[in-house]
Amino acid sequence: MKADILIVEDEEAVARELRTMVNHIDPDLHVIGICGDGETALARIISDKPDLVLLDIELPGINGLEVAGTLAKMGDGPAVVFLTAYDQFALEAFDVNAVDYILKPIDERKLRRILERSKRILDVTAKTADKTKETSPLRHMAVD
Image (cartoon, rainbow, N blue to C red):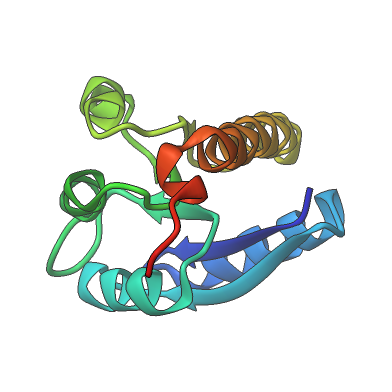
């Protein structure tokens, strides 16, 4: 399954390293951009509709937990994997429907496992959405 990824990380070196790792891990994963703050991230997520967001928690302005909370309220948003140097945010991350979180410094093997898991979740979600469309009574309604 192909997936578009948005990286939201305020440390440029970390963001570039993440892009390199993602490109190395799986050619079906496409990094569509990098954002360095929460406000820009929300705008890009709404406009570009990535499948997955690698989201730093500590960001200038709106932090990553607030970004994810906004996305959770909107529904039908991207899967979110948090990036953090602080493991105390793990419970909060899952409260806003995060798929997973990665502790910094980021290990490529762990990132690979998380991206593979995220792709499986995205695939199941897409298949479920397709089945819902197929069985929906609205799909068979005729409009005069």
